[in-house]
Image (cartoon, rainbow, N blue to C red):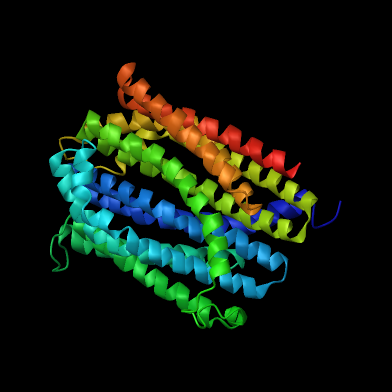
Length: 448
């Protein structure tokens, strides 16, 4: 057994890449968590509106982020082949596609209230959600370009800068939230709109810092990332589109499962929707840990695929899977042991609705413990498949698992069999379990 293919080497390299990526993913998620926490202290109806608005923004963002996520395996594979020109071409065209997408989808945010009302949401919640989304929509382009740069730098093993810049943006977001949501320090009290302004401000600063780092760092200047940025490269653009669009649609399939659950929870009640939003934020934090290891696995698998080393590729995948399972088991223990204490962090105990939110959210977190293993395995399998540039079949498998199995299961369990919100979450468990089994089967069938 060579040093390169030893299990210990794979574990160390995956952790070296994965831990900063987990940190940056958690920090990125913390931007939304801080919005939820701080708006939750402002009021229950604004909280429900921000939960709905943020989840709507996210579902649109996920589709466009496919181009950014395509950068990671493409750059890693190009580096495995020592093709620096391809690194530059792929990353630039991913930024082109991200900018174009952000402009095209903006009208969805501007006229979101009629859409939300048509989907059965309450008038007061839909109105506040639209005011939030009309501001947040301006952040789509910077958010997508930031994701491209994060993928580019991560594939170059520059994960530390991604982590620290993202952490700094969280601190800035908290400060601006405090000023604009509540009207502190002489600023106007904007409520939910203040959270949207704070997020845009943080995204813009993150974009500026990462762009300067990628363009000016002496060790990265050889890639000439922004030189003649305006020149099209149609072949590279098609390659990024063909790999990235299925990634985005796969994210849409999964995100749609959770968005559908939020919409259906809104049919049940405002308190239930607020509790659902808190539980989703908590489980999203655990998901970010799985996502960090998945991104590390994508880079490792793509590099070995570019080098043609299938033995190292398979061993890297096995080690990453074991690490993910360990994280999932820890998450299960925490969610089962401390559900009430976790939900308490998100609500103001003096509000009259807080006891109901606390009780309902604690129950949902207990159900969430059921899908931790499935959630970790499915995102890891997607990372493996992206590493070998297989995205179209996974898109179909994900769509079937989430839309044809998960969403109908949620609806039937909640409204036909009378399980309510708990039934909605049991449907999530079923959809994620189907996805994890089919996607992992697909990967190992390919690499064997």
